[in-house]
Each structure stands twice: as C-alpha cells, then as structure tokens.
Image 1 (cartoon, rainbow, N blue to C red):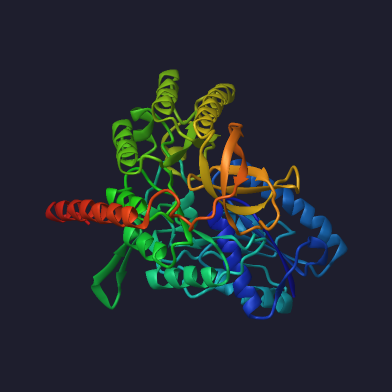
Image 2: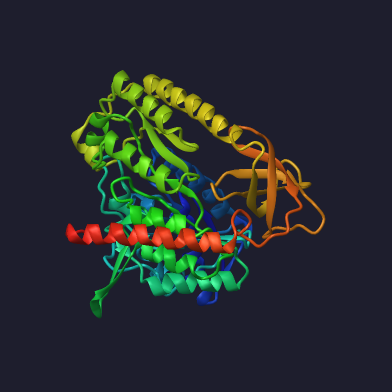
Length: 482
C-alpha cells in the first residue's frame, strides 16, 4: 500500500516518523508524497501546545474530503495526540485508528486488521523498555547531509506545565552500541552530521542488563560518537539545566567535531516561577551553568526556551526574565505564550490567570529583546571566517547556498563552481541579520577542523582537557555521585 505520513512537532517526532516509515517499508508498503495517491494517511502529532493540536484537527477535516473521493482510504493518528486523546479521536468518523509513541511496531497488523475487519482500534500502551534501537529509520525528506538519532525516549522531569511525561512515558536510554552503529551507518552513507536527540540528553544513562557494572553516561556516549570520524559533526539536544555537567563541557571542548552550541531551556528568570514550574533549579543555578560553559568553551553559542505568562506570573517575574536574557545574552531562543495542557500538574494545581492580552504583550517584549540580542551576537561575527557544512540552497535564490557553522548559526553565501551540498567550506562573514550570517566562500585549502591550530597544539589541548575532566570525575566519585 502507499503510505502518506504528515509530521507535526519537534525533532523527536521527525525521528519517530522515520522509524514508522522503516517499520512499514519492511513489510512491503511504500511511502508516497501526496494524499491524493495514498491508500493510508498517517498524521504524527504533537500535544505540547494547544495550537499544535488544533492544526492537526484542521488537517483531519482535509483528510475527510479525500475520504469522500477515495472510499477505501484509511486515516490513522499517531504520536502524542493519539496517546492523550485515544478514544476521543476514534469517535471522529474520519479516524480509523490511533497509535501511541511506543506502539509503532503494531502498525502493520493494525492497518491489515482495518482492511480485513473494518474495526477501529487504538494501541496506546506506554512501555518501560521500547527504544526502537534495532530499527534503522528511513530518512524522509532528507538532505542526505544531516540526520537525527534518538538516544532516549520519554521523560522523568515532570515539569508542571509539560504533557510529555504523560504522552511519551518514563525515560529510557538506548543501548550505546546501537547508537554508535547507526551513526557509523549514516557516515558510511555519506551523511556529514548527526544530532543526538532526547527530551533530556544529559540524563542519558545506560547500564548493561547482563553486567550492571558496565555503564555509559552522556558524555561518554558523546565521545564514542565523536570518535567515529573527525569529519562527522556531532550535535545534541535538548539539555536540562539541572543535569548538564562539566563532563559534557570538557568533552565538547576536547573534540573539534562536537559542535559548540548548547540549547539550555531556562523557561523563566524568576525563582518563584521556576519553583512553580518544577524545574528543580534556581536562577542562580542556571547562571552558574552558563558561567561553566563560558569558562570551558568560550566560543560556545547558547540558545534557550522561554515561556511568557505562566500561572500567577507577575510583572516583576517578567522583568526578571528580561534581565536574565540581558545577562546571559542568548544567541537565539524559542519563545511562547503559556498554553495550559490537560492533566498536567499546572492544570490541576494552578490557575491559568494571566490575561491573554498580557501574555501577548510580555511575549512581544521577550521577542523584541531576543531579536536585539541575536543581532548583536551576529554582528560580533562580522569579519570572522567559519567552517560551514552546506545543507542546501536558499529559499530566496537557487544561486545562494545555506549551511550552519559550529555555533548552529545559519550562514547564507553565493554558490561557487565545484561546491555542492554536503561540502565543508570556509565562509567569511560580511553582513548579518538577527537570524542569519551573510558571507562569501573563501579559498581555504586546509584539513577539516584543523585550520585554527596545528595538530600538536590540538593534541596538547585535548591532553589538558582530559586531565581536567578526570579531576572532575574523581571529585564527583569521592562525593558519591555518578
């Protein structure tokens, strides 16, 4: 059968769609690119904000029109909405089945059952073990340059505003051998960059079930992937301020191919709000983490998430968020109004009592400040030369190429003869906006990642960083910490 898959939400959902495609292709189905040619439409959904759910409900109306044209068309809802709404979605006459994030292996049987019996079905049991570690995802709509690799599933943090623990279950860490194997496979296929994904990558911890004394934590996993090849770029997200450790920072500093960018969601600059959000750190804790990053990786870019108008947020709380932004000077940020999610701690315990107009005003002030900070950050890069991995052509002109530097900043530059997607080039920055760096390709003919320092200097740097990391580990072990 021809399967059309539409994906909403974060990078984890994109990776899940690739897992679903692999499961279905393995039993003989094919992936198509339009609803008109599809026998089965799958929509992979997000429940993090109400707006994301409303978009999906709108798409179900579109699929209903297609069902009128094709009486045999099957429509399935996957992912977080399927997990959250279950039977409610099945009551929609245009939905044939719902499948949660831990039940994708059941899809071939569910599709076959729908065809044979006509019964609707929901499969939304959350697992304590499922990581899909044995499945090689089908890279859909890929530029064949960058790929996502899921290293954990679920989340244990229970932030009061967040629905993810309810829709994706408890946290599970994937076998590191399978992660390294997937990264090696991608590199052999010509991919130049992998991003390790998790709701909270820093809490990654795998213990061998056959030998509990054998374990791998996140910085060790990061090192294993970085060692595959010095020309394979490694990124990761998302970090949690309560869990990111110096071991990760030293490892990032040691390996030039681990990109110098950390996404560290702060959510609020107010201690009162952070406590109410159940974030398990204070403003002061967060700023200490930022100081550690700046000390160990001076050239590291830092991005964040910020929520405007959470429950009981006062104008003073809002000003504390603005002042923290000024202090940290984030390179970029994802910024949202608070959207109450059913059954979360915040929905059960607190009142969503900041008026919509006030939420909008505060969000606009946060966005305006971040645009200013992003522009200032990018202006500091004018005149610098960055190594850029070419990811594609610009949406504005096919005569321009785009790619990101180590700091995850998007660079735009004119195409040149002999330069193609997947190449590393050195770009001198001549101009910028708050969102992009604008430059020209330079004729630099030096080995990838080694153009700033000599090999001997880099080896000395790594030796010193390893010494500092070992000292830090010994101190933590003496304190009885992982």
